[in-house]
Length: 211
Image (cartoon, rainbow, N blue to C red; front, side, top):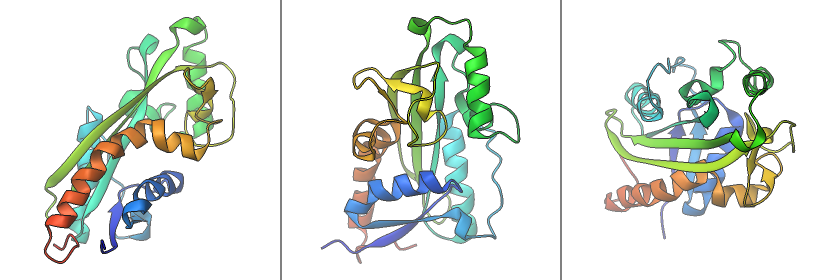
């Protein structure tokens, strides 16, 4: 039987922490939010790629706390906007951005774009840093869709109510957690990431990562 162990997720977003906890629960991997560690300050997400930001978000807290840390960076890429919001997805409308203000800006930018040209993709990159800050695993997942004009559904967060998955005819805001755990960008990234995580665990003599 696998021995349960705990990782730190370098995110203060409680909804994201809950989603990742649910993805890892079948492997008896517990997740604590970095928000539980007040000694860890805000990390400047100034990388030019999702991988750079995810790596920084994992490595810095890992060294500071002396434990294994998951860093995750995700965002929305809209084709008609040249890839924006991209790495700025969480701060698209400025340093005090909220989901509401980000979505308002996105809709304003797409005001003159016809529906068939509102293609987009959610992307997620996840990495694992060991207690020295070295990156030991990484994976990226992608989910394509289109941006609709009216919010639909109350599930999820961020741009979810406006991101429609054509195969299902529903937005991320309307899809159930069960379906999202199968098709979302985050789920697809973790599908690749979890086997790496389990291998690292199983390579450890006592069934846990250790230090």
